[in-house]
Image (cartoon, rainbow, N blue to C red; front, side):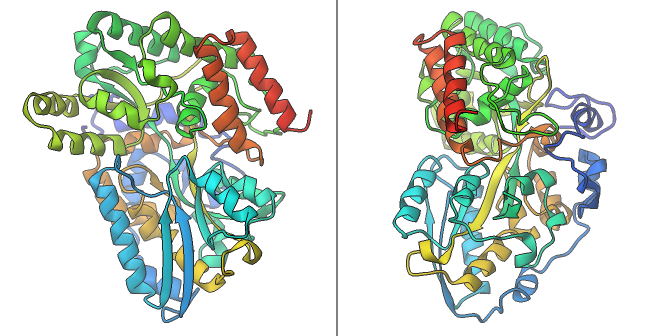
Length: 498
């Protein structure tokens, strides 16, 4: 990557100013900007890599001192918490930061006995559903951004807003706070905000006769590039993810669907009502057809896409057998880790892949450029559903600690953005910007973010209905039209026949 002096960057984007120029086109979308946007603790109207760098390192924070105002540091209590943390596929640095967090928590609140369970991403929601039904839930749970509204609507969550743990609502993205609001009440606090980017192997592009420093500009280009790469090189072009009941699937397909003008409901509109499905719209069908073209017609994506999560794309990519995919900044760190562990001829290939790894903005479609405004939120479960009862002070102490400018930044080190906007002002954000390759590209995607529908049925729609629609079309069980109409009918049923 180079600085903003007019030279081309390794991501294929001319300059950081240029990167932001693309993103600014949709800065006024309801997903990120609202009537309160300019009251934030950072100025979202100036959002750009240059602005982010200008504020990084300008604020000193003392997490223990701030949290002591919420819960005294000598408080004696107990705590249970579930969350999805690092796994075997995570970069080494992510596991280290996680260990550092829990060590710092124990040092700061040594008298709070803590039972912390790291639960797999694709199992957490089902396990929590069972636990709440049996009054055996933890006190605190951190969920993916679309999961919380289901439990809030069922009355499982205690009301919780940033002010309850010593912060201001204006310290958090409006779009993120929207995901924590149901029926006019706030039930959680963002821990981190995610926007992904488009990743490609420049060498494979060059070998296939494509410009190695230029990513596909549109989703139509993705289809064309994927076919050209597969036909010429015999490797997979695009890392499609279509696993059923897996959050990885909507996080990679919905940007494509929104780009073509489709939607699960009307979540991409400036003022969504969430009343009717758009899964049978022309835009949705166009996006689905593009996926069918890659999987069925061109056979340019992994045949295992039907059972793949993003983790299954990592080994083919580092082996030079996959050219394009959508992922977080953490993907670069993961590739560096994999290259370090490779040996012999595999080591040479892996090192070349890392050297030729590029990041760019997710391609546009006829309607827009889009990315899922993702991340996680942290919640307190009501006393009557908690195994052994709720220790509210212990829960609030942990949430203050977790959502602090310090730890919301550190815990998002290679794969996300701090949920607390003050995190962008810290010394740790400055260190991240200086040490993490491509971070500014994914950060530049934030203004293009679209949150999933803020309704109780969102989890089932995104994790079940949308992947099922894809599978029905990709396997030939249904035509594209039939799969889209079937999915829209299922959403109508979930919404009560509206």
